[in-house]
Image (cartoon, rainbow over all chains, first blue to last red; front, top):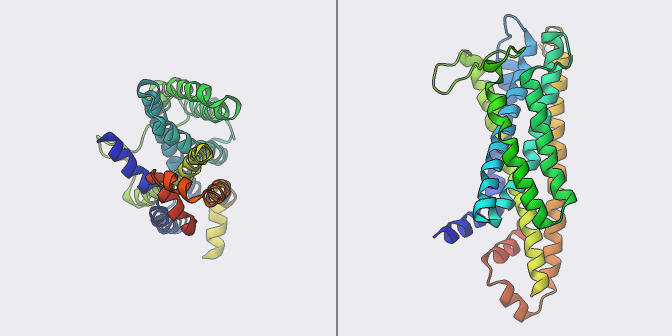
Length: 235
Length: 76
């Protein structure tokens, strides 16, 4: 049954029709999101127009955290069940997670200058995001420097250890005195952001999520073709 | 209107650089992945075409191979 599901999901992931659908949705959501974020959404009463940086900074941070959590979860599956498809999925997710982490750090730094008067501060949230960046970097590096079997084990351990940092990033604003404000968007309670700012934020998050899915699909195909190329050599 | 959009109350340089940096990274990542994808696809296609009929029957036993062969014609 599991093999059947894996085989079916593989076919969907390889299908170019599915990739084209994601590309179209990404372009639609990105266009709407950019228009809402740069033109329609209001200025902040304190931060003025600089608040618009939020529409690229926050979704990038959310997605890089989400991707790393998925990688860590799958890596646990790799170590326990020795599932090779989990390895391919994790490896294919990492590049977009890494780029989103970089975007979150750089746009955060750009936002910090007009808001806090500095490009960088050793604030708990920023520092823990930098630590996540180093974990992403180590994860990707492990695939470059070690041979396949060793890389699977080492990259899995890197992501599982790095997962400890994920709740630290999330709760850093509650646990320590920080330049960052506490969470404005909560799943369990009412958000403190007005809907005029929530709409562009969600549109941009959807666009970024679709982009990461698109890159994942392309990267997954690259990894799968590499495996299949080796398979053809053996025939 | 357009000037206001560019200047953004004096914060334009920050806002636009943040958005452009994001979109530039998207473009770079897409280009790199797309190049890898096309390269590996071409390799697979070349290898598959070099197989004889018995080897093709053997390769086609794997449904993933069949799907990959079909998608060669629909590359992004």
